[in-house]
Length: 302
Image (cartoon, rainbow, N blue to C red; front, side):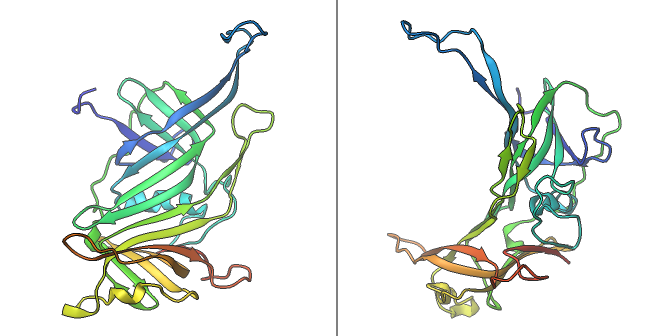
């Protein structure tokens, strides 16, 4: 299809799209996935037969991404955390709660598709110098259906303000640092339960893995810039850290109880800046049950 042909997406808490949120996506790979079974036949032929073919599994999965405004962030991010909407999001435990599931209605030009009971399996926020921030959501769901029509009175798209890399502030152990690029990943490691069904009847939350990959200039505190070399081989104990983005009105802060930096070292290119890529892993700060602030990651809106 030509670039001039429009595609659209709406997200909703229910299949009836009773209170949808317009989502200004850039890319969408949501798709139905079926697994077929077929008889291999008896000995004497290398060619599988179509006899006794059955559908063994039917589900949907895929990724959508965009440069989000505040309304879109406020709608989708509670689904990443399996949490009720609010100013502070902390990780929930129930991937099948009403706070976790949602529906996506996508206009793919020649057909409409509804993706049922999606959950965010992995969320990625990334950015680099002089670019927009990209918000990406890898989802798994229970079923794809096609047909229908775009609502007569759909929710209208809104402009809002998209976040860019200059809106980012990274703080480690109370000290701010300025990166060249970053990728924040929240992996929910969802575990599907299918049992005697074609589609998953339940998704359970697995171990939550949160990583933050960042690249810095390797330098000391010259020219009033951050002393990035202090991050190299940071203490095993780790430290509290945060990644904050601000659109001029709203600040979204990803707060990490304990961020460790086990890997990374400066690299020396033939020419240009000395860079120091660091792979950081987030943890809770104690072995006790999670408290009000002791979480691998929280998202705080102010």
